[in-house]
Length: 432
Image (cartoon, rainbow, N blue to C red; front, side):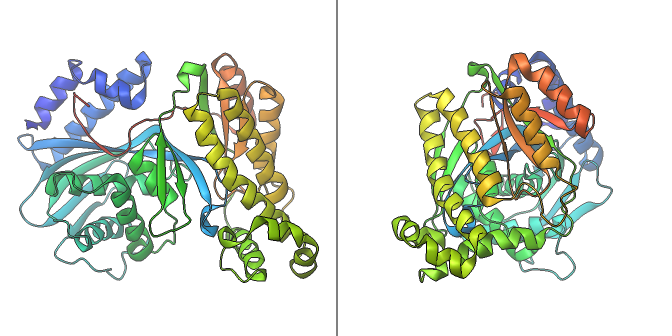
């Protein structure tokens, strides 16, 4: 192993360029930025913990939802992709059983005594809970837990729908897996451990899509028929080959007071399932549902019917998207993205809150996207909806036109240009 100073020199001399290109793409400006970012992280670690410590570097990406909008909670199918924004952690083992994590941009350094692997009052909602929870989840699965000192830096945009918290959880899991368990836990294991940490220790009832996409990497479909043992399929995806890039635009809407809107989507889907004596829509026979639409709408209303229609179609669509990528049918992929976007807007009805019709940033972003990209790209809302981010697949020759239009409405820097990353959580080495 090398010291922080030795790794920094190796990175600055270009010895890591091939690995950095695999993680972040081949653009010269991006490569230059990542060299400097890694070097700065190594300097920060050395200043905190000492220049002579031997270190390793771990990385976990953010993620974007691609298909299966609001299908996971009713045990459907989703598609997600890792993106080329990540959390990196410079790490060295210690021998006092304490996890010390200093994150760039935060004044406080987390210090977690790993002898206590149960929830601690007052840690809910804070990063200490995630660190302790990941260690606890790993130990429950028979893993070894030990102390480490770390410095992390993240360019996963917070509050952007790219899962910055999941990326942090997963990178902590990767650290403990690599440092103390010889990598024996699979990416899906690390995802489940991370979800456990967020649910039980952090206090947020998240699903498994975010953590799985961050941990596994590439584009994946997740079938939640059995949520305790989800089926994950992975497929590599090269947007650059097709002359496209991925854009995520923050439409700057507030998520305040939207909890009941999100809950209503799930609640109405489950109400339809209950009409047929089932707990979730995945267990309902679609043909039986279609045969009794009149009865369902009479009891539950039209919006519940429309949301159920969306669930069945978008679960299928997530699988179809994966097949289109695997078969390199890119035009079909774009068509399916647009179809899914229309289904979310028109059937699932989570583009805006009917209680606040003056604020429709997501709808406006989608309208602008359709105006610019119609026939040459794809666009959709992503995530919970009602406010927040939209996604677009944009031809490179239209990128500056598209970005200028979206930034012109939602503010400079609102539109972020990303790529799909074909690596999940990894120990970064020159021979990656």
